[in-house]
Image (cartoon, rainbow, N blue to C red):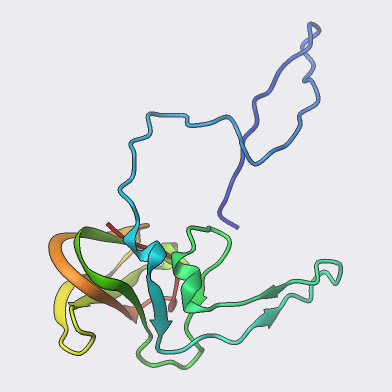
Length: 174
């Protein structure tokens, strides 16, 4: 999984490492952190062309864990969940309804398997019927996140994956 935690190490007088108590708090920011703009997609309603069926992890029965891939998981602000399209979905798309027309300045798409690269298009709409191009690219690019910056008034944003693994860890609209 993608989240990594670091803990402060302290040493005894003889140079040995003192026991480390692991927490999810870590050591804090290692560089200056700039405040992020509010993610408007967090309060939206996500839908998609398809959803990959739940997957029961069988490698360790003690985990008793099942992965689910609902569209809402691309806007839950968590690195531990994701939306995945069904295998065989020829034109996978993911969509967010912001609930009302909103002014946005940009989007960030965090695709599953970013090192393999993705091509995508984002379309915007005020009514969910008439769509206009907003962002994306047709060439396969390896990066994370894929960012599009363009001021627009939108209610709906639809991301269609043209190439690459059909899934999103997270989607931000700000």
